[in-house]
Length: 244
Length: 244
DNA sequence: CGATAGATTGATACTGCTCAATATGGGTGG
DNA sequence: CCACCCATATTGAGCAGTATCAATCTATCG
Image 1 (cartoon, rainbow over the protein chains, first blue to last red):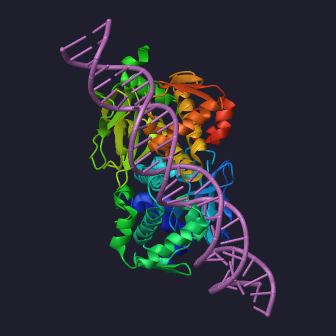
Image 2 (cartoon, rainbow over the protein chains, first blue to last red):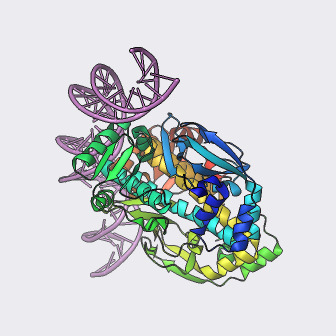
Image 3 (cartoon, chains in turn red, orange, blue, brown):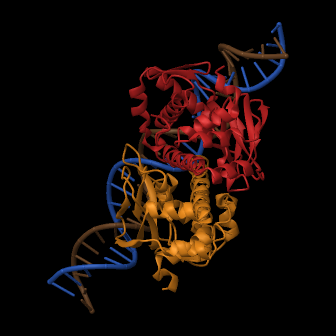
């Protein structure tokens, strides 16, 4: 396990450094934050819609997703998250959670008091800018997901989702883009792409049969990156450099 | 035409005032911004994906939408905008446009230099906070749209879209919630809900036949607000007070 | 070694799409 | 003022992509 995992605040600093040029004082301010770690089993909720959030949730290890529930019980995943992501930065200014955050795998998180994070953002403008920028990129990703779910067919949806996940993983330094463990079940993929698990299964098989990917036991190999990109209509511009 | 329309900066101030408690100095800073107005015919693009934006676009009159295009040419509208909205606040920190902005009706806009808006946001923290909050609420709306296109059926999608639009119009003081001109065509509604225009037509008819709405010649009456809410699974919490 | 979650496959149903034709209404030029 | 034109709305018929339902198979784990 790499050294930086040991310290959540270092992980946070590392992440924000990809978003703005932090100086020594910025890093010190971040390093002075208080936090409390907590471990979650796969499937457990870190945040529930309607919660009044007083702490932000930094994902230190494992994977999580954010999702909303429809009236009929249908679950729509709106984003996936990996180590280093602050899953609910919006709670700095929006008190009430408008969606759920759920662990996809066993996950270790660090709770950082909103007030402190807000103070650092105010006193260290570059840090504030990095956080704001992060939420803006997130918004761009949501827009792309609306497009994905609204205007692409099954194969393209899944291909696009895999491209995004691979690109973000690689950018976060969590593995090569060609092969990595895929933390989500087919049901999770279905809930992220607005499909049914059965159809996800068939569509993944199709991508396998076309030789674009290999996928077995939560292990994903992208055999033909160009082909997968093309299948998903994936253009990483919307990630604004969060995956280069 | 109400007096505040005359001055774009007053309109902007009015909007930001709903997001944070501005003081006199905040208002003065906003009033000192430079801008340049421009008029657009319906259908014209205000911003194109890939543009390098140096000015933010305040909608002064008329209606606009933001959208992305899929590889196959399909258009996915990701948000609707009305007078008072800054359509592309994200350009304060993201230089390159990741989507298009298009006028739905004839529209009057005011271009405000990003640099100036950014300066005001920095020097007047309350103003900065109001703008940040606006983008966070926007992100929440995007999440709801992902749910809408991903996990609701045709009738619910349209009902939800109408509820949101009505609620935001009313909150912006642009008309009563029960009856207002609907600026978008059925094709626009289709592109916002991930449907085809034909099916939008049939679904609107269904809502009409059920007595929930009346809709003719771009004029929408909500005859049964409770019924429409129920049909769309609409809960305004995700608007975080931008529609009460 | 069972228990259990997840993956896989088959058969069938249905929502929403496609294609195509017609109607309507608002705007325009003669 | 009327006739025409165009975008938009409306309707019908047939089809396709996904959903549903249900069964079976396969890893993993205590």
